Length: 446
Ligand SMILES: *Cc1c(COP(=O)(O)O)cnc(C)c1O
Image 1 (cartoon, rainbow, N blue to C red):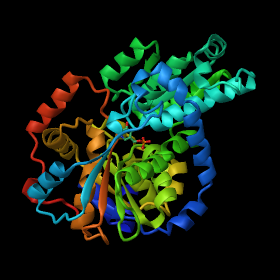
Image 2 (cartoon, helix red, strand yellow):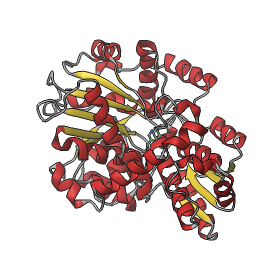
Image 3 (cartoon, rainbow, N blue to C red):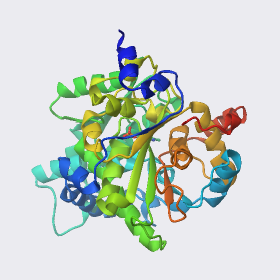
Image 4 (tube, rainbow, N blue to C red):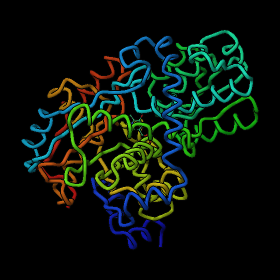
């Protein structure tokens, strides 16, 4: 029996994944937030440490990236109610949606325009801070504007940072590392967009391209960095510093809920839908949300039908030991931020007791939703970032407990798009014009 057939026999849902259908999978391993958090190797203190570091660097950001002045040097994005989009989804699908639909606009994060500004920046900052500490450069009586000064720049100029990326991680690591003065190399897969490569090169970043997919770019990047002790490799598949940077989003959004008088508790549940590639971004955010809201928050990961790597890793319990290619999927998708065939094993294991479920989305759905969001709310996100938008339709039409409660908040995490050039965005919208968004109004998650 082939591998593929064996998985289909053991887990019938894999049969639908093989056929690239849009499916919802509910995680049978879910435990209480308290137990889930306790089973991970990370703690609330680790997240606090990351949060404190981002605060220390806020004065640096205010100077180097003036667009962060309004947020006092913090990299944060708006939390927006999108009622027109909600109404349009209801009109088109016929679902009953009495709760509220919210959008976390990481597409509008300053400096690098995607969720990678959370994790990627934190990792680069931690590395810079650690190097500066080792070299006794930091004057504790002064704020971190000192990181713009010559002794720091000279130190970083003889240190390298490397990363393998489908695009957005490369952008965030590249832009910040170059601003600090590091020599930075981004190893990019063939599916990475040309404009991203061009933009990085314009900032003085070295871009190396591979014919192969994301895993190959990471592998090559890691191999090169291993041979050079002055090179720090940002390991998207295993990095705790990336994960913790993402996790800080939990306390940030908790503050936004308070500001906006939005109550979250078990009677007022929060459903969150996170586009997932290798897993660090959505995993870190989900972890930070569980720390803040415990069992009141319900997290779902969204992946392309051609690259449901986290879902496959969780279903089979093989995590990074299985690739979507083993069930005949090709990992080809316009959602380049999600074009990952093999998930992070570290993240999969942390998420196993914490994640409510996963679902898959077709590319054409992403394009259709992209245009719908642009038309209804004038918000422009990239295709990957729309994967979360199918979440409420899945949970509501599958009768997930409380999803239809009038008290429910459904939060779609819009993960990127802020750096997409107009001509590319226009092409996305044009592509969407040929798409039938909800053919026969079926959501496909029977
Ligand atoms: C990277 C990325 C994600 C997913 O993050 P992972 O850490 O790879 O799971 C989602 N959306 C966009 C736009 C991204 O760039």
